[in-house]
Amino acid sequence: MYVRIRNLREDKDLTQQHMAELLNVTQTTYSRYERGELDIPTAVLIKLSKFHEVSIDYLLDQTDNPKLKTK
Image (tube, rainbow, N blue to C red; front, side, top):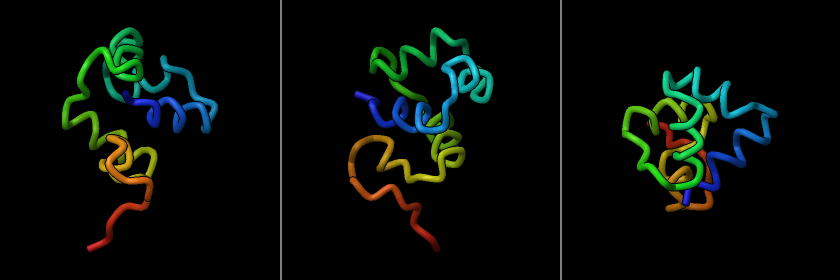
């Protein structure tokens, strides 16, 4: 379900452990996010969006446009 967060992580050559530390979760929890076994909390989605500089809609596969909307 959350293939995009895995792809974004891999594009930056980051480990699941690195992302887990950034998000203050365990590596197991982060792995479960990537596999879609655990819903990603809103606060974590926001952190991921900011870190990868993409929209939350892009992370959730609601759009193919990764650009953040500007105000």
